[in-house]
Image (tube, rainbow, N blue to C red):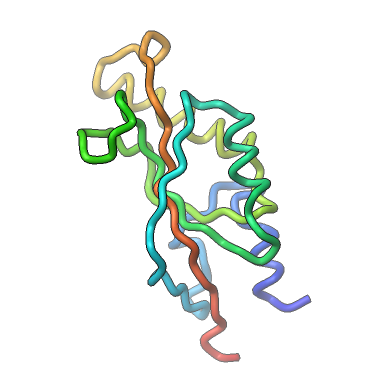
Length: 134
């Protein structure tokens, strides 16, 4: 198993993997188009569904945000920096991470997220990892 396969299996499995966490000797090609995956609330089943539908060697860059009306042209609240996921990522870890970010946002912006109807939206794109020295 090569180094890139090991990285793919570890992405957001024990800790959320941000772009800065990837070794600088690995080139990250982010040239693909963005897509949107809409989830009602922080629904674990839908997060699991997103993860389970990732193909074996694929990696996605996720920009998570919440929206009240699920329209991407209207204002939204970004929950986190972009992070990387693969089919081996831990959906529970991702849900807990995003819930904690939502808690911080609700304290900082003084709103009660438990009384709020919202969509979690993953703005995502496929990325490619290439070893610069291979």
